[in-house]
Length: 340
Ligand SMILES: [Zn+2]
Image: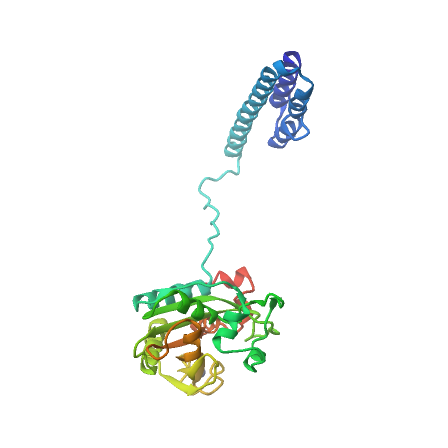
């Protein structure tokens, strides 16, 4: 053993000393320390060593390994020093050249908007909740008053994970309403920013993966007035000025009455392409939580009322930054993302 070890050590040290480049060192390292290297083979041969000599054998082999590693590191450092010295003494070396700029990452526009919204709603006493993206039919539809064969299901082009198990990719953030009702005792306020999925053909305004932010407030004597006040407050914070809002009747199975909330177009006075010449932009469906949904969540609708809204986050981000194609948000194009 010791003869073999000495022979290998001598070979390795000589090869290391002779190496003129780091690539050569890497080759020497592979040759001796690599998986199929000489030291590895030596260690593997411990099987053939009598049991009472194995400890000393292993110890010797490990010492050899360490000696080679130390020599490699020292030689590497020396080559690096030589390389730098050569570079500095070269005629075209100019220490006054500006350093190469580091590439900085930037936050996704969605992250900017979500953080801002979380700040705004936290300051109004809202909890920030999260929910599973792979959801049960029960939470996504059934308990939101959208039973099987309900026509509203047609509007949610659903990605099914497992129809037998009734598992799907959530088509909206509303299932977290139920999960919140089950877990939290009223009165409470909560928002749920998150990803949703629909099996849709994509175009400039449709994407299979998009973002929503659900809002839910439950307590005694909550009215539509609270809903309008809340929406106005948050829009003022996001767009940094007072924006007019209006409610139109809208039908959503999990609210009663239900509304479409429109906001006055922040980009024009007489109509533009963003508001389709109407000066109003549809922002989010909302309404008073349906008594059936409260009951599904274990909350007494005789005592408590609440409002809910489903803010289109992707849409809001597009409005906020003047982005005209929703596909850019999930497109992972660095040239686009760098701008934020
Ligand atoms: Zn407009």
